[in-house]
Length: 238
Image (cartoon, rainbow, N blue to C red; front, top):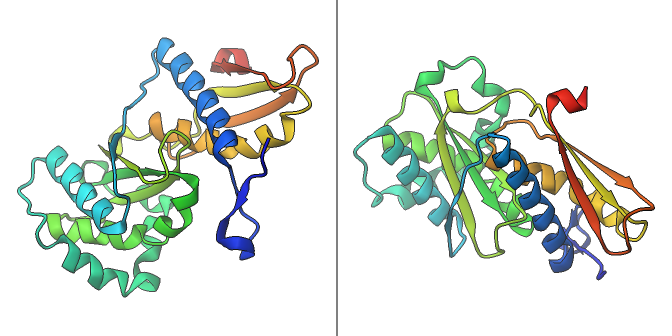
């Protein structure tokens, strides 16, 4: 397997899956989601959009929340408002803190998941607070929506996916299911690194704030280059 990419060319040590690793991780994620859907867990489709940039994302967040809430809105002023808040990122970046969801009346709060390719995650996450405050201002909301940027292995490098919900629809606890991936010795290092990306992809599409446990186990029964996915329910986990 080709070596995975590292973000910012040595600026940090964050591992970014290359095309082949991402393909494997996406397949595992889809197998998990399919298994969960068959067991009657809610699995959501994300609306995908091309031309990834912060202004496009902000407009879609406003559109999704506004449409879901039945609010009148215009997208004409979004770019101007966003630019104002982007210049104040250190002030507004804490808006993305997941802990803020707890004390707010659930009927007055919205959560918006933004799914991106791992290569785009860091840059957009730093702007999530500005996007959230822009949505609040444009929609005249009582509370700033929670905007969560998530790594998603099923989203292309030039795409982004959006999923907006009422906070009452988003589970705050850790998912009750557990994911196990059985691999041969050759795939084990890559799959261990992919585990957190798989967990993020699954958590987003099953609308959990916290990630499920994804455990990678080596098995002599799995052939080289192959893998087997298991999803265990709470009863099976116990």
